[in-house]
Amino acid sequence: MIKFFRQSYAIQYVVIALIAIALWIPSFITGRATMGLGNPVTPIFNLTDSLLGGSSIAQHAFAFVLLVIETLLFNAIMVNNQIVGKVSTIGAFVFVLLMSLTPTQTNFCPFALSVFFILLTISNLFEVYQLPNPELNLLKSGAFIALASMCYSPAIILLLWVFIALPIAKKGSLRLQLIPIFGFLFVYFLYFVGVFLFGDFRSLLDSYRDYFASIKFSVEGFNFKNIGLLLLLVVSTLLLLFGGGNANFEKTIAVRTKISMTVIMAAFALLFLFLGGNVLMNGLVFVVISILVSYAFSYIGNTGWANLFLTLFILLVFANHYYFKLL
Image 1 (cartoon, rainbow, N blue to C red):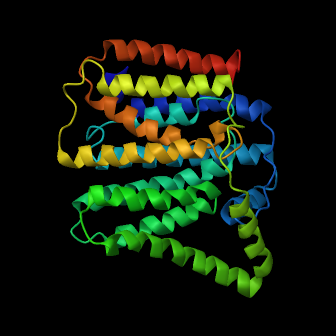
Image 2 (image 1 turned 30 degrees about the vertical axis):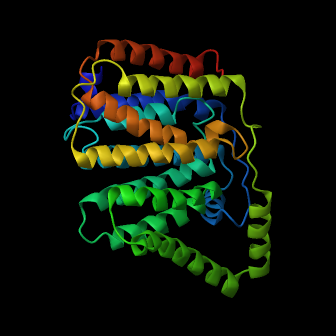
Image 3 (image 1 turned 60 degrees about the vertical axis):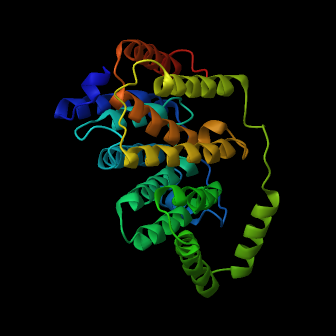
């Protein structure tokens, strides 16, 4: 199975599409419309939600199309950065599976919308390693984080990830590390000016004040099922990365640098899980694991046990969607 998705022909995309459709069918049948947040700190999500008109079908259709776009974008990022083979769909396969693991994830939610901008941020920061003049990429990274946070507010902390991970990709002055911050602030400056001219600016400031004042880390979104799933994913990823049969892993400095940046992002993905609500809806951890697992599947030498685990895991995922629905 792993060797099948290491290739890129029409058949691979057909299989990935069928997997995605099969995992999302139950949400179209039983799903309910997501209640709009109406919070000024998530203006892009609010706008999208209002355009969908509170229709469950429209929301799920939009979320599914968004998943397709994000899947293609994710696979392109993996290929362009040599995290997977030059001609491979393994990234798309892993991303669809991990972003649709549970019925909870196959819904329209703020994080699902923010993933598009998070992937663009990752792409721009990964490219910095090869660029002699990365200023534009860094500016766009900050702008994309701002847009992601306008869909899903906690995404704002990815600005700190860029600040910390950037020296790994590009040795330089503090000036380079400040450029993403300027990009971030410029987007918010435009938003605030727009609200000041055409909206209730005072109310917006109060909303942001209340939001930052109410931020707290808690375990209220956890239960034994969620913890079990996350532990299974983390342990499986570590075994794939550091277990037997990994002698064929890509050793170029560029790839190792990008994997190191991804590992740093894992710390921020962990923070997302403690920001309240269902942890499955704070899913940066699934993006991080998708990158690491795609890398492992692409270069792992002995695929026998990995294929066995993957087959059992897929069966468990489909059973969770159609049979016992634990999560």
